Length: 361
View 1 (cartoon, rainbow, N blue to C red):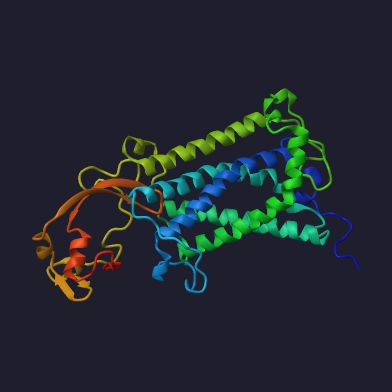
View 2: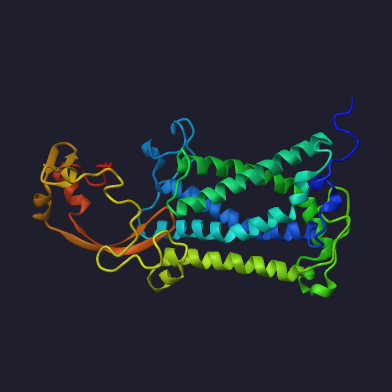
């Protein structure tokens, strides 16, 4: 008994329905090569972002039972204070810049999703599984990341954990996909050149030779845009999104470029002139929680409770320090208060002791 009928389904399963002369191993290889550095930066800075959360605290770790499997063998440095703003700014900026290239890469490889028969051999099964995980993982990771940047969560699951595990699936599939496709990339660049197709104008744009299991069209239509024009448009879109992300990460005069920032280009002026992700009301903090009954409780070798007035009566220090958020935006603001080392001394903590801070929320 045959697993699949001899007659091929129509529509996207018909190779002749894919007619763009731009598709082929070269375009897929070129876009994939351009996408890879951005993904590597996103992966590395995402890993560092989780390290900055200090996963050894338990509840801060997205890994169940951090004592069972904890890949974080280092502590996040506290100096320079702007380090997290840089790494997370790169994470978000490169992630946004990767989206146009990712969509173009998915478009270039679309015929592979509709190959017939869907299963030809064990090697073909491995390739298709890696492709399915790669496509699904990339869409999930990048677009949940975009929703997070907009502080919008239309799903019931925890974003950080889901984003983290989705990235692991995506990166695993990507490594497998690269291993499978290295011969294809080498042949495409050897035959077509790395950048040679970008020199051809519209009149000289031709389809690549159609081979078995290739994305090159078997019945190509006439080109409506050159490969140079296509890659250029994708590159400009990628650069534009990267600049917009940099606007909210760098701030200052560059904030005007951050047209996609969730609170707009101008967060206001004055001491509170910066982005507020969640108000006290949204966080469930009532006036009674911060009024005269509020106390700061310090627990060390002895326990000390301080009211707000008692804190204000102590020696205060004013410092300029950044607020760096996981959404990629950052700002430098003045902070005035009691240095933590003075509070630790009140509680009898020795120099160099660790401090665990718990907020009302």
